[in-house]
Image 1: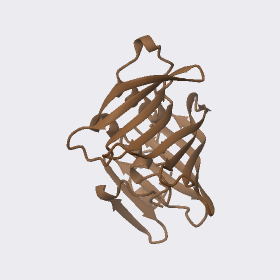
Image 2: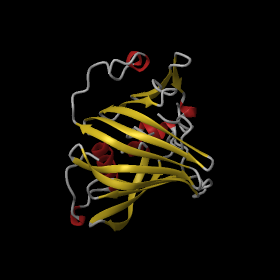
Image 3: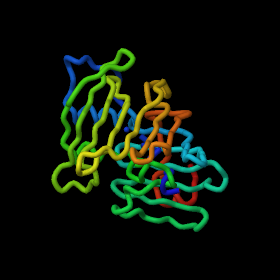
Image 4: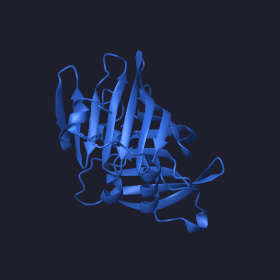
Length: 254
């Protein structure tokens, strides 16, 4: 379950700002990334999605439900299939925990394991968390502009600050002017592309444009990928007190 819990909440895949911004008033690169994260999370959010893990000789899918509040609180829970139901992942501040009903234990994920696979998917634990750490731990610069469906797309290069606790040599993001994240590429310390998350479909849910299908793929294994498909999303809603707690992770009340 460790792997399944990126989407997902990323990668899951980072979109709160309200409307397209003209190229003439382009904000700085760090502001664009922060706005994209806020646009995706809102002040709070609740969503359901399907995560599909594809391999050349098999494929499996899971149904997930996710909640977020602010920049540092996220909860992802597996609803189906039955054998995985109840598995969950909680991000609170800068700490992450997972829960597995099979062993009935809450386990804290050490920082050394944040880049490991979440529940056997191509998303890492850190991907699933989709926190705003990238804003503060990287230096960002706008390196290009593209177009997509009548929108301006900003291409941003993000380089880790000295001493930042990250494994990547750099990350390159493509963000549309309505703050939909279209592409997120991860490079190693030698500048080699390692993995990439690409948006396959954009639509409107919860009153805002957002990525409906995102695929994460490692460059050294082109026949393997993990896709997240968002089914429902609500934003800026009241999240019940006690949602983002270890108690609720173990014994779901919400």
